[in-house]
Image (cartoon, rainbow, N blue to C red):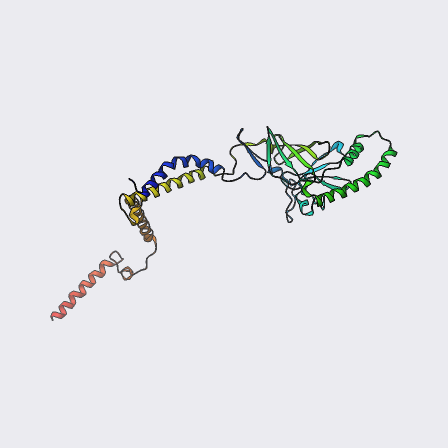
Length: 356
């Protein structure tokens, strides 16, 4: 029977192929998608519409000719008003207040229109893209409270019946103004009392691919609204909606996946080897590491290489001069032969004098 460490090593070795197969999927799901992006697995396409999001300029930065200083606009045609909107970001226009919107949430408005000097929000900022079939769409919600039926009917009559008499229109304008003021007040009261119970305006933007438009440009057109003017539909053509082929840059790349596989392999190798050396070979200390002799010889070779390199570099460094390197003291120095003869001659002379 195998001991407990051996069984652990065998189990780790057996599950290694499973871990290697699960590593790519775990790496791909390790991080969520970036804001304003989406990956479609059916076509292996990655979409990022952040290039068409208009960002406010920094205070100290001067606007260049290519910088956009206002949000995108769409003509409302028979609606009697135009629309202003941004993509995946709040509009950069300054809005002091909007009907039925708390002051703290005004800065998050991503689409709005102006009616009789009042700002109506048609959606708060959202960075979540959605595919409905083949259509890429962006949805804004939690705008101003929806109009009451009476107000909607009056606006529809105002923009739809152009054949009415001027006198009748003048009389109705005063009534409409008073009624709009009452409706505006009721919107604010509903927003403060009922909160989320109030039906609010929303925006649905369909994003279409247009490769002919320059990068960072978009053409926005107003499609229509619901009968109660609670939902507004737009179509935006841009190159950013064409998508690109490839994996989304969210999970680990090829190098990251290889690194995870290498770490798992080394962990199994180390734990299994230690268990084998301790239980079967009865090794202790550093010798319980797997293939200790091989790693020790490699370490010794590396140490020798370091010593050789350091000694070679030391020879190139300037040395401190000793007595044997004084000028004229070496064998190969200039005049060395004559000095040796003089010394021999002096020794012979001293010997003669000593004999005398």
